[in-house]
Image (cartoon, rainbow, N blue to C red; front, side):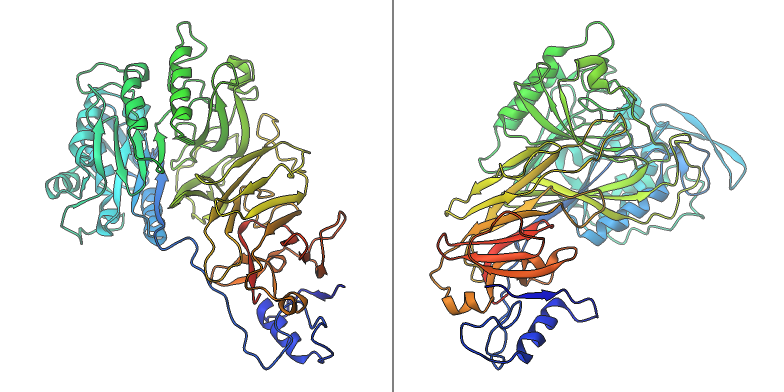
Length: 597
Protein backbone atom coordinates (compact mmCIF):
# COMPACT_ATOMS: atom_id res chain seq x y z
CA UNK A 1 0.00 0.00 0.00
CA UNK A 2 1.14 3.52 -0.63
CA UNK A 3 -0.08 7.06 -0.05
CA UNK A 4 1.24 10.25 -1.62
CA UNK A 5 1.16 13.91 -0.71
CA UNK A 6 2.86 16.99 -2.09
CA UNK A 7 5.17 19.03 0.15
CA UNK A 8 3.50 22.29 1.17
CA UNK A 9 5.14 25.62 0.41
CA UNK A 10 2.24 27.93 1.26
CA UNK A 11 3.41 29.06 4.68
CA UNK A 12 2.25 26.24 6.94
CA UNK A 13 4.98 24.20 8.53
CA UNK A 14 5.23 20.61 7.33
CA UNK A 15 4.03 19.45 10.75
CA UNK A 16 1.01 21.79 10.65
CA UNK A 17 0.14 20.77 7.10
CA UNK A 18 0.24 17.08 7.93
CA UNK A 19 -1.70 17.55 11.15
CA UNK A 20 -4.46 19.44 9.37
CA UNK A 21 -4.47 16.99 6.47
CA UNK A 22 -4.89 14.06 8.86
CA UNK A 23 -7.59 15.82 10.84
CA UNK A 24 -9.70 16.47 7.74
CA UNK A 25 -9.38 12.95 6.32
CA UNK A 26 -12.43 10.74 6.41
CA UNK A 27 -12.21 7.79 8.76
CA UNK A 28 -12.57 4.49 6.91
CA UNK A 29 -10.94 1.80 9.03
CA UNK A 30 -8.19 1.42 11.55
CA UNK A 31 -5.84 0.13 8.87
CA UNK A 32 -6.49 3.01 6.42
CA UNK A 33 -3.71 5.42 5.52
CA UNK A 34 -4.94 8.81 6.64
CA UNK A 35 -2.21 11.07 5.36
CA UNK A 36 1.56 11.32 5.26
CA UNK A 37 1.94 11.32 9.03
CA UNK A 38 0.05 11.80 12.25
CA UNK A 39 -2.53 9.77 14.08
CA UNK A 40 -5.66 8.33 12.45
CA UNK A 41 -7.71 9.65 15.37
CA UNK A 42 -7.91 13.38 14.72
CA UNK A 43 -9.24 14.05 18.21
CA UNK A 44 -6.06 12.77 19.86
CA UNK A 45 -3.50 15.54 20.48
CA UNK A 46 -0.21 14.95 18.73
CA UNK A 47 2.61 13.83 21.00
CA UNK A 48 5.80 15.62 20.04
CA UNK A 49 8.88 13.52 20.66
CA UNK A 50 11.84 15.62 21.76
CA UNK A 51 15.54 15.01 22.31
CA UNK A 52 18.53 17.21 23.07
CA UNK A 53 21.18 17.14 20.36
CA UNK A 54 23.98 17.90 20.69
CA UNK A 55 23.80 16.90 24.33
CA UNK A 56 23.82 19.31 27.25
CA UNK A 57 27.50 18.44 27.78
CA UNK A 58 28.59 19.69 24.35
CA UNK A 59 31.05 22.57 24.20
CA UNK A 60 32.62 24.65 21.44
CA UNK A 61 35.82 26.41 20.47
CA UNK A 62 36.83 28.60 17.53
CA UNK A 63 39.79 28.64 15.16
CA UNK A 64 41.34 31.55 13.24
CA UNK A 65 44.64 32.12 11.47
CA UNK A 66 46.87 34.62 9.68
CA UNK A 67 45.54 37.96 10.96
CA UNK A 68 48.01 39.90 8.82
CA UNK A 69 47.36 43.33 7.34
CA UNK A 70 49.59 43.63 4.30
CA UNK A 71 48.46 47.01 2.92
CA UNK A 72 48.73 50.58 4.16
CA UNK A 73 46.86 51.12 7.43
CA UNK A 74 43.43 52.49 6.49
CA UNK A 75 42.70 53.68 10.02
CA UNK A 76 41.34 50.32 11.17
CA UNK A 77 44.35 48.00 10.90
CA UNK A 78 47.31 49.29 12.92
CA UNK A 79 50.71 47.65 13.36
CA UNK A 80 50.23 45.37 10.31
CA UNK A 81 47.44 43.59 12.21
CA UNK A 82 44.02 42.93 10.62
CA UNK A 83 42.11 44.41 13.56
CA UNK A 84 38.94 45.12 11.56
CA UNK A 85 38.66 41.42 10.65
CA UNK A 86 39.62 40.35 14.19
CA UNK A 87 36.80 42.45 15.67
CA UNK A 88 34.29 40.86 13.29
CA UNK A 89 35.52 37.38 14.17
CA UNK A 90 35.43 38.08 17.89
CA UNK A 91 31.76 39.09 17.56
CA UNK A 92 31.06 35.77 15.84
CA UNK A 93 32.81 33.78 18.54
CA UNK A 94 30.75 35.54 21.20
CA UNK A 95 27.62 34.82 19.15
CA UNK A 96 28.54 31.12 18.89
CA UNK A 97 29.19 31.00 22.66
CA UNK A 98 32.59 29.35 22.36
CA UNK A 99 34.75 28.58 25.38
CA UNK A 100 38.08 29.39 23.76
CA UNK A 101 39.72 30.41 20.47
CA UNK A 102 42.84 28.92 18.87
CA UNK A 103 44.92 31.15 16.56
CA UNK A 104 47.27 29.15 14.32
CA UNK A 105 49.94 31.75 13.68
CA UNK A 106 50.95 34.94 11.85
CA UNK A 107 49.50 37.29 14.43
CA UNK A 108 50.73 40.30 12.41
CA UNK A 109 52.46 40.79 9.08
CA UNK A 110 55.63 42.65 10.03
CA UNK A 111 55.92 42.14 13.78
CA UNK A 112 58.96 39.87 13.65
CA UNK A 113 61.19 42.99 13.80
CA UNK A 114 60.81 46.75 14.19
CA UNK A 115 59.09 48.23 11.14
CA UNK A 116 57.27 51.20 9.63
CA UNK A 117 53.70 51.47 8.31
CA UNK A 118 51.97 54.26 6.44
CA UNK A 119 48.54 55.38 7.67
CA UNK A 120 46.15 56.68 5.01
CA UNK A 121 43.88 58.36 7.61
CA UNK A 122 46.58 60.50 9.13
CA UNK A 123 48.89 60.56 6.07
CA UNK A 124 51.78 59.74 8.41
CA UNK A 125 54.30 56.92 8.61
CA UNK A 126 54.67 55.31 12.03
CA UNK A 127 57.54 53.42 13.60
CA UNK A 128 56.48 50.22 15.34
CA UNK A 129 58.38 47.82 17.55
CA UNK A 130 57.79 44.10 17.84
CA UNK A 131 56.26 44.85 21.25
CA UNK A 132 53.83 47.30 19.63
CA UNK A 133 52.71 44.67 17.12
CA UNK A 134 52.18 41.95 19.71
CA UNK A 135 50.57 44.48 22.04
CA UNK A 136 48.03 45.57 19.43
CA UNK A 137 47.16 41.92 18.77
CA UNK A 138 46.73 41.32 22.52
CA UNK A 139 44.61 44.46 22.91
CA UNK A 140 42.07 43.18 20.42
CA UNK A 141 41.68 39.91 22.23
CA UNK A 142 39.94 41.88 24.99
CA UNK A 143 36.44 41.35 23.58
CA UNK A 144 36.97 37.62 24.08
CA UNK A 145 38.26 38.17 27.61
CA UNK A 146 35.27 40.39 28.39
CA UNK A 147 33.04 37.44 27.57
CA UNK A 148 35.07 34.86 29.50
CA UNK A 149 36.50 33.29 26.33
CA UNK A 150 40.06 31.97 26.37
CA UNK A 151 42.61 32.70 23.64
CA UNK A 152 45.48 30.39 22.72
CA UNK A 153 47.81 31.60 19.95
CA UNK A 154 50.73 30.18 18.02
CA UNK A 155 53.43 31.99 16.12
CA UNK A 156 53.85 31.81 12.35
CA UNK A 157 56.63 32.59 9.92
CA UNK A 158 55.73 36.30 10.21
CA UNK A 159 56.37 36.08 13.97
CA UNK A 160 59.48 33.91 13.67
CA UNK A 161 62.21 35.94 15.39
CA UNK A 162 63.69 35.75 18.88
CA UNK A 163 62.28 39.21 19.55
CA UNK A 164 58.81 38.06 18.53
CA UNK A 165 59.18 34.96 20.73
CA UNK A 166 59.99 37.13 23.72
CA UNK A 167 57.08 39.52 23.17
CA UNK A 168 54.72 36.62 22.41
CA UNK A 169 55.46 35.21 25.86
CA UNK A 170 55.10 38.64 27.46
CA UNK A 171 51.65 39.28 26.01
CA UNK A 172 50.28 35.73 26.09
CA UNK A 173 51.26 34.12 29.40
CA UNK A 174 48.26 31.79 29.09
CA UNK A 175 50.32 29.47 26.88
CA UNK A 176 52.12 28.38 30.06
CA UNK A 177 49.50 28.68 32.78
CA UNK A 178 46.06 29.10 31.19
CA UNK A 179 45.53 32.43 32.98
CA UNK A 180 43.68 34.83 30.68
CA UNK A 181 43.11 38.59 30.91
CA UNK A 182 46.10 39.34 33.14
CA UNK A 183 45.69 42.96 34.20
CA UNK A 184 49.34 43.98 33.90
CA UNK A 185 49.62 42.37 30.48
CA UNK A 186 46.49 44.05 29.14
CA UNK A 187 47.57 47.43 30.50
CA UNK A 188 50.74 47.03 28.44
CA UNK A 189 48.69 45.96 25.43
CA UNK A 190 46.52 49.07 25.66
CA UNK A 191 49.69 51.19 25.97
CA UNK A 192 51.14 49.85 22.68
CA UNK A 193 51.34 52.32 19.82
CA UNK A 194 47.96 52.54 18.11
CA UNK A 195 47.26 55.56 15.87
CA UNK A 196 43.83 54.11 15.02
CA UNK A 197 42.32 54.37 18.52
CA UNK A 198 39.92 57.13 17.46
CA UNK A 199 38.79 55.25 14.32
CA UNK A 200 38.34 51.75 15.71
CA UNK A 201 35.61 50.66 18.14
CA UNK A 202 36.65 51.24 21.72
CA UNK A 203 36.92 47.81 23.34
CA UNK A 204 36.57 48.75 27.00
CA UNK A 205 37.94 46.32 29.58
CA UNK A 206 34.57 45.50 31.11
CA UNK A 207 36.04 42.36 32.66
CA UNK A 208 39.04 43.26 34.81
CA UNK A 209 39.40 39.87 36.48
CA UNK A 210 41.83 37.23 35.26
CA UNK A 211 40.38 33.76 34.70
CA UNK A 212 41.75 30.34 33.92
CA UNK A 213 41.04 28.17 30.88
CA UNK A 214 42.59 24.73 30.52
CA UNK A 215 44.59 22.34 32.67
CA UNK A 216 47.57 19.99 32.54
CA UNK A 217 49.80 22.46 30.72
CA UNK A 218 52.99 21.04 29.27
CA UNK A 219 55.74 22.52 27.12
CA UNK A 220 58.60 21.22 24.98
CA UNK A 221 62.21 21.66 26.05
CA UNK A 222 63.79 24.93 24.81
CA UNK A 223 60.39 26.05 23.48
CA UNK A 224 58.73 26.99 26.76
CA UNK A 225 55.34 28.57 26.12
CA UNK A 226 55.88 28.44 22.35
CA UNK A 227 55.28 24.73 21.79
CA UNK A 228 52.75 23.73 24.44
CA UNK A 229 49.77 21.52 25.21
CA UNK A 230 46.80 21.69 27.52
CA UNK A 231 43.55 19.88 28.23
CA UNK A 232 40.10 21.38 28.10
CA UNK A 233 37.25 19.05 29.02
CA UNK A 234 37.77 15.91 26.91
CA UNK A 235 40.19 17.32 24.32
CA UNK A 236 43.97 17.71 24.37
CA UNK A 237 45.26 20.68 22.40
CA UNK A 238 48.82 20.24 21.11
CA UNK A 239 50.30 23.50 19.79
CA UNK A 240 53.55 23.25 17.81
CA UNK A 241 56.09 26.01 17.13
CA UNK A 242 59.28 25.34 15.16
CA UNK A 243 60.45 28.92 14.65
CA UNK A 244 63.35 30.76 16.29
CA UNK A 245 63.12 30.58 20.08
CA UNK A 246 63.98 33.23 22.65
CA UNK A 247 67.58 31.98 22.72
CA UNK A 248 67.88 32.74 18.99
CA UNK A 249 68.14 29.03 18.17
CA UNK A 250 65.82 26.83 16.14
CA UNK A 251 64.37 23.55 17.32
CA UNK A 252 62.82 21.65 14.40
CA UNK A 253 59.94 19.24 14.88
CA UNK A 254 62.33 16.27 14.88
CA UNK A 255 63.85 17.58 18.14
CA UNK A 256 60.37 17.87 19.66
CA UNK A 257 59.06 14.49 18.49
CA UNK A 258 59.61 12.65 21.76
CA UNK A 259 57.61 15.33 23.58
CA UNK A 260 54.88 15.09 20.94
CA UNK A 261 54.78 11.28 21.32
CA UNK A 262 54.48 11.36 25.09
CA UNK A 263 51.97 14.22 25.06
CA UNK A 264 49.65 12.41 22.66
CA UNK A 265 50.01 8.97 24.22
CA UNK A 266 49.65 10.23 27.78
CA UNK A 267 46.07 11.41 27.56
CA UNK A 268 43.08 9.63 29.07
CA UNK A 269 41.33 6.98 27.00
CA UNK A 270 38.19 8.04 25.20
CA UNK A 271 39.40 11.61 24.76
CA UNK A 272 40.18 13.61 21.63
CA UNK A 273 43.42 15.28 20.56
CA UNK A 274 44.08 17.82 17.83
CA UNK A 275 47.52 18.99 16.75
CA UNK A 276 47.88 22.60 15.59
CA UNK A 277 50.78 24.39 13.90
CA UNK A 278 51.24 27.25 11.47
CA UNK A 279 52.74 25.41 8.51
CA UNK A 280 51.09 22.45 6.86
CA UNK A 281 52.19 18.96 5.84
CA UNK A 282 51.44 19.43 2.14
CA UNK A 283 49.76 22.67 1.10
CA UNK A 284 48.62 24.00 -2.27
CA UNK A 285 50.47 27.30 -2.69
CA UNK A 286 53.47 27.17 -0.37
CA UNK A 287 55.89 24.32 -0.90
CA UNK A 288 57.54 24.92 2.49
CA UNK A 289 56.00 22.87 5.26
CA UNK A 290 56.41 21.83 8.88
CA UNK A 291 59.64 19.97 8.05
CA UNK A 292 61.31 22.35 5.61
CA UNK A 293 61.49 22.75 1.84
CA UNK A 294 60.93 19.47 -0.04
CA UNK A 295 62.60 21.01 -3.10
CA UNK A 296 65.86 21.38 -1.18
CA UNK A 297 68.49 18.79 -0.44
CA UNK A 298 68.38 17.51 3.11
CA UNK A 299 64.59 17.55 3.46
CA UNK A 300 63.78 15.44 6.51
CA UNK A 301 61.56 12.68 5.11
CA UNK A 302 62.02 10.59 8.25
CA UNK A 303 60.78 13.39 10.50
CA UNK A 304 57.80 13.81 8.20
CA UNK A 305 56.92 10.11 8.43
CA UNK A 306 57.59 9.85 12.18
CA UNK A 307 55.25 12.75 12.85
CA UNK A 308 52.33 11.42 10.81
CA UNK A 309 52.77 7.93 12.24
CA UNK A 310 52.73 9.37 15.76
CA UNK A 311 49.43 11.12 15.10
CA UNK A 312 47.89 8.02 13.54
CA UNK A 313 49.14 5.70 16.29
CA UNK A 314 47.61 7.97 18.92
CA UNK A 315 44.24 8.28 17.17
CA UNK A 316 44.69 11.95 16.26
CA UNK A 317 42.29 12.56 13.40
CA UNK A 318 43.04 16.21 12.62
CA UNK A 319 46.14 18.31 12.03
CA UNK A 320 45.12 21.97 11.65
CA UNK A 321 47.31 24.75 10.24
CA UNK A 322 47.27 28.15 8.55
CA UNK A 323 49.94 29.69 6.28
CA UNK A 324 48.28 28.97 2.91
CA UNK A 325 45.38 31.44 3.29
CA UNK A 326 42.69 29.16 1.84
CA UNK A 327 40.21 26.56 3.07
CA UNK A 328 41.64 23.18 2.10
CA UNK A 329 40.91 19.74 3.56
CA UNK A 330 42.66 16.51 2.63
CA UNK A 331 44.19 13.27 3.81
CA UNK A 332 47.98 13.45 4.00
CA UNK A 333 49.86 10.15 4.19
CA UNK A 334 53.41 9.13 4.91
CA UNK A 335 55.90 9.25 2.05
CA UNK A 336 55.03 5.73 0.87
CA UNK A 337 51.39 6.79 0.61
CA UNK A 338 50.11 3.89 2.72
CA UNK A 339 51.64 3.45 6.18
CA UNK A 340 49.70 6.14 8.02
CA UNK A 341 47.62 9.23 7.35
CA UNK A 342 45.96 12.17 9.07
CA UNK A 343 43.31 14.64 7.94
CA UNK A 344 44.89 18.04 7.34
CA UNK A 345 42.71 21.13 7.61
CA UNK A 346 44.28 24.28 6.18
CA UNK A 347 42.33 27.25 7.49
CA UNK A 348 40.91 30.11 5.48
CA UNK A 349 42.57 33.52 5.50
CA UNK A 350 41.80 36.15 8.14
CA UNK A 351 44.07 38.59 6.37
CA UNK A 352 44.09 41.14 3.56
CA UNK A 353 46.11 38.53 1.63
CA UNK A 354 45.07 35.35 -0.18
CA UNK A 355 46.92 32.74 -2.18
CA UNK A 356 46.15 30.77 -5.32
CA UNK A 357 47.15 27.08 -5.50
CA UNK A 358 49.88 25.82 -7.79
CA UNK A 359 48.60 24.49 -11.10
CA UNK A 360 50.72 21.38 -10.52
CA UNK A 361 50.05 20.32 -6.91
CA UNK A 362 52.98 20.16 -4.50
CA UNK A 363 52.11 16.54 -3.81
CA UNK A 364 52.74 15.81 -7.49
CA UNK A 365 55.82 18.01 -7.78
CA UNK A 366 57.66 16.71 -4.72
CA UNK A 367 56.06 13.44 -3.55
CA UNK A 368 54.99 11.62 -6.69
CA UNK A 369 51.30 12.39 -6.18
CA UNK A 370 50.82 9.51 -3.73
CA UNK A 371 50.49 11.31 -0.42
CA UNK A 372 47.45 13.60 -0.65
CA UNK A 373 43.76 12.76 -1.15
CA UNK A 374 41.63 15.84 -1.64
CA UNK A 375 38.33 16.37 0.19
CA UNK A 376 37.44 20.05 -0.03
CA UNK A 377 38.79 23.41 -1.17
CA UNK A 378 37.56 27.01 -1.27
CA UNK A 379 39.59 30.07 -2.25
CA UNK A 380 39.47 33.78 -1.48
CA UNK A 381 37.21 33.64 1.57
CA UNK A 382 37.65 35.21 4.99
CA UNK A 383 36.88 32.32 7.28
CA UNK A 384 36.58 30.94 10.76
CA UNK A 385 35.78 27.56 12.29
CA UNK A 386 33.52 26.40 15.11
CA UNK A 387 34.41 23.04 16.61
CA UNK A 388 31.71 21.30 18.67
CA UNK A 389 32.85 18.52 20.98
CA UNK A 390 30.10 16.32 22.38
CA UNK A 391 31.42 13.19 24.07
CA UNK A 392 32.59 10.86 21.30
CA UNK A 393 31.60 13.31 18.59
CA UNK A 394 33.66 16.16 17.12
CA UNK A 395 32.20 18.38 14.39
CA UNK A 396 33.87 21.26 12.57
CA UNK A 397 31.72 23.93 10.93
CA UNK A 398 33.48 26.16 8.41
CA UNK A 399 32.09 29.67 7.89
CA UNK A 400 33.24 31.87 5.03
CA UNK A 401 32.63 35.39 3.74
CA UNK A 402 33.48 36.61 0.22
CA UNK A 403 36.58 38.77 -0.08
CA UNK A 404 35.57 40.02 -3.56
CA UNK A 405 39.04 39.51 -4.97
CA UNK A 406 40.10 37.29 -7.86
CA UNK A 407 43.20 35.22 -8.50
CA UNK A 408 44.66 38.16 -10.43
CA UNK A 409 44.45 40.39 -7.38
CA UNK A 410 45.10 38.46 -4.18
CA UNK A 411 44.83 41.34 -1.69
CA UNK A 412 42.39 44.03 -0.66
CA UNK A 413 43.15 47.40 0.95
CA UNK A 414 39.91 47.83 2.93
CA UNK A 415 37.98 45.13 4.73
CA UNK A 416 34.80 44.27 2.80
CA UNK A 417 31.40 43.85 4.39
CA UNK A 418 31.81 40.39 5.92
CA UNK A 419 28.70 38.29 5.32
CA UNK A 420 29.51 34.87 6.78
CA UNK A 421 27.61 31.74 5.84
CA UNK A 422 28.17 28.13 6.82
CA UNK A 423 30.08 26.46 4.00
CA UNK A 424 30.44 22.87 5.22
CA UNK A 425 30.38 20.56 8.26
CA UNK A 426 32.63 17.57 8.83
CA UNK A 427 34.28 15.68 11.66
CA UNK A 428 34.39 12.25 13.25
CA UNK A 429 33.03 10.16 16.11
CA UNK A 430 35.17 7.95 18.33
CA UNK A 431 32.35 5.38 18.34
CA UNK A 432 31.78 5.56 14.59
CA UNK A 433 33.57 5.07 11.30
CA UNK A 434 34.58 7.24 8.37
CA UNK A 435 34.19 6.14 4.75
CA UNK A 436 36.06 7.61 1.78
CA UNK A 437 33.88 7.54 -1.32
CA UNK A 438 35.51 8.45 -4.62
CA UNK A 439 33.74 10.02 -7.57
CA UNK A 440 31.22 7.70 -9.22
CA UNK A 441 31.56 5.16 -6.42
CA UNK A 442 28.66 3.85 -4.33
CA UNK A 443 27.84 4.95 -0.80
CA UNK A 444 26.75 1.41 0.03
CA UNK A 445 29.97 0.60 1.91
CA UNK A 446 28.54 2.72 4.74
CA UNK A 447 27.34 0.05 7.17
CA UNK A 448 27.76 0.64 10.90
CA UNK A 449 26.37 -0.85 14.10
CA UNK A 450 26.19 0.88 17.46
CA UNK A 451 27.41 -0.66 20.71
CA UNK A 452 23.76 -1.28 21.58
CA UNK A 453 23.03 -3.08 18.32
CA UNK A 454 21.36 -0.44 16.11
CA UNK A 455 22.48 -0.95 12.54
CA UNK A 456 22.56 1.89 10.00
CA UNK A 457 23.17 1.17 6.33
CA UNK A 458 23.17 3.23 3.17
CA UNK A 459 21.30 1.00 0.73
CA UNK A 460 21.66 3.09 -2.39
CA UNK A 461 23.38 6.21 -3.72
CA UNK A 462 26.34 7.25 -5.85
CA UNK A 463 28.95 9.97 -5.34
CA UNK A 464 28.26 11.85 -8.54
CA UNK A 465 29.89 15.07 -7.39
CA UNK A 466 32.17 16.49 -10.08
CA UNK A 467 33.68 19.14 -7.79
CA UNK A 468 37.40 19.67 -8.37
CA UNK A 469 40.17 21.63 -6.72
CA UNK A 470 42.07 24.43 -8.47
CA UNK A 471 44.58 21.95 -9.92
CA UNK A 472 41.81 19.80 -11.38
CA UNK A 473 41.82 16.95 -8.86
CA UNK A 474 38.41 15.48 -8.12
CA UNK A 475 37.28 16.06 -4.54
CA UNK A 476 36.38 12.87 -2.67
CA UNK A 477 33.61 12.53 -0.09
CA UNK A 478 34.36 11.49 3.47
CA UNK A 479 31.21 10.13 5.13
CA UNK A 480 31.33 10.51 8.93
CA UNK A 481 29.20 8.31 11.20
CA UNK A 482 28.67 8.00 14.93
CA UNK A 483 25.99 7.05 17.45
CA UNK A 484 24.20 8.52 20.45
CA UNK A 485 22.35 6.17 22.77
CA UNK A 486 18.59 5.89 22.35
CA UNK A 487 16.49 8.17 24.53
CA UNK A 488 12.82 8.28 25.50
CA UNK A 489 11.90 9.76 22.13
CA UNK A 490 13.49 7.08 19.95
CA UNK A 491 13.08 3.38 19.20
CA UNK A 492 16.71 3.02 18.14
CA UNK A 493 20.07 4.54 18.88
CA UNK A 494 20.63 7.86 17.13
CA UNK A 495 22.84 7.95 14.04
CA UNK A 496 24.93 11.08 13.52
CA UNK A 497 25.65 11.27 9.78
CA UNK A 498 27.65 14.05 8.12
CA UNK A 499 30.16 14.87 5.38
CA UNK A 500 28.02 14.15 2.30
CA UNK A 501 27.21 17.76 1.37
CA UNK A 502 26.66 18.08 -2.40
CA UNK A 503 28.63 21.32 -2.64
CA UNK A 504 30.01 24.02 -0.38
CA UNK A 505 27.24 26.14 1.08
CA UNK A 506 24.49 23.63 0.26
CA UNK A 507 22.07 22.23 2.83
CA UNK A 508 21.61 19.07 0.77
CA UNK A 509 23.43 15.93 -0.26
CA UNK A 510 23.00 13.76 -3.29
CA UNK A 511 20.08 11.36 -3.12
CA UNK A 512 20.66 8.18 -1.11
CA UNK A 513 18.66 5.61 0.84
CA UNK A 514 19.26 5.26 4.57
CA UNK A 515 18.03 2.27 6.60
CA UNK A 516 18.12 1.79 10.37
CA UNK A 517 17.07 -1.09 12.58
CA UNK A 518 14.62 -0.50 15.42
CA UNK A 519 13.25 -2.09 18.56
CA UNK A 520 9.57 -2.98 18.24
CA UNK A 521 9.04 -3.21 21.99
CA UNK A 522 6.83 -0.10 22.05
CA UNK A 523 5.79 0.10 18.41
CA UNK A 524 2.36 -1.13 17.33
CA UNK A 525 1.10 -2.26 13.95
CA UNK A 526 -1.54 0.47 14.14
CA UNK A 527 1.14 3.15 14.48
CA UNK A 528 2.97 1.77 11.48
CA UNK A 529 -0.21 1.61 9.38
CA UNK A 530 -1.06 5.17 10.43
CA UNK A 531 2.37 6.28 9.15
CA UNK A 532 3.25 7.83 12.50
CA UNK A 533 6.37 5.67 12.93
CA UNK A 534 9.43 5.69 10.70
CA UNK A 535 12.88 7.07 10.03
CA UNK A 536 13.04 10.53 11.56
CA UNK A 537 15.46 13.43 11.35
CA UNK A 538 16.16 15.75 14.27
CA UNK A 539 15.15 19.39 13.87
CA UNK A 540 16.71 22.45 15.43
CA UNK A 541 13.75 23.01 17.76
CA UNK A 542 14.34 19.65 19.44
CA UNK A 543 11.63 17.71 17.66
CA UNK A 544 11.82 14.73 15.34
CA UNK A 545 10.12 14.81 11.95
CA UNK A 546 9.81 12.32 9.13
CA UNK A 547 13.24 12.24 7.48
CA UNK A 548 11.81 12.88 4.02
CA UNK A 549 10.32 16.21 5.12
CA UNK A 550 13.81 17.72 5.17
CA UNK A 551 14.44 16.86 1.53
CA UNK A 552 14.96 19.63 -0.99
CA UNK A 553 11.78 18.77 -2.90
CA UNK A 554 9.64 15.89 -4.07
CA UNK A 555 6.57 13.83 -3.30
CA UNK A 556 6.43 11.73 -0.13
CA UNK A 557 5.36 8.12 -0.59
CA UNK A 558 4.88 5.59 2.20
CA UNK A 559 5.61 1.90 1.65
CA UNK A 560 4.85 -0.78 4.18
CA UNK A 561 7.62 -3.19 3.32
CA UNK A 562 11.22 -3.30 2.23
CA UNK A 563 13.04 -0.76 0.09
CA UNK A 564 13.38 -1.56 -3.62
CA UNK A 565 15.74 -0.14 -6.19
CA UNK A 566 14.28 2.73 -8.17
CA UNK A 567 12.27 4.36 -5.40
CA UNK A 568 12.19 8.14 -5.84
CA UNK A 569 13.37 10.85 -3.48
CA UNK A 570 10.77 11.13 -0.71
CA UNK A 571 9.83 7.46 -0.57
CA UNK A 572 9.95 6.03 2.94
CA UNK A 573 8.83 2.93 4.70
CA UNK A 574 8.82 0.43 7.53
CA UNK A 575 9.82 -3.19 6.97
CA UNK A 576 8.37 -5.11 9.89
CA UNK A 577 9.93 -8.40 8.77
CA UNK A 578 13.49 -7.04 9.19
CA UNK A 579 12.54 -4.42 11.81
CA UNK A 580 14.02 -1.60 9.78
CA UNK A 581 12.91 1.89 8.86
CA UNK A 582 14.22 3.47 5.67
CA UNK A 583 13.88 6.60 3.53
CA UNK A 584 15.16 8.05 0.26
CA UNK A 585 16.62 11.38 1.32
CA UNK A 586 19.14 14.09 0.43
CA UNK A 587 20.17 15.47 3.81
CA UNK A 588 22.56 14.65 6.63
CA UNK A 589 22.09 15.12 10.37
CA UNK A 590 20.77 13.08 13.28
CA UNK A 591 18.54 10.11 12.42
CA UNK A 592 16.59 7.54 14.45
CA UNK A 593 13.48 5.36 14.39
CA UNK A 594 10.81 7.49 16.07
CA UNK A 595 7.08 7.37 16.81
CA UNK A 596 4.65 10.26 16.47
CA UNK A 597 6.36 11.80 13.47
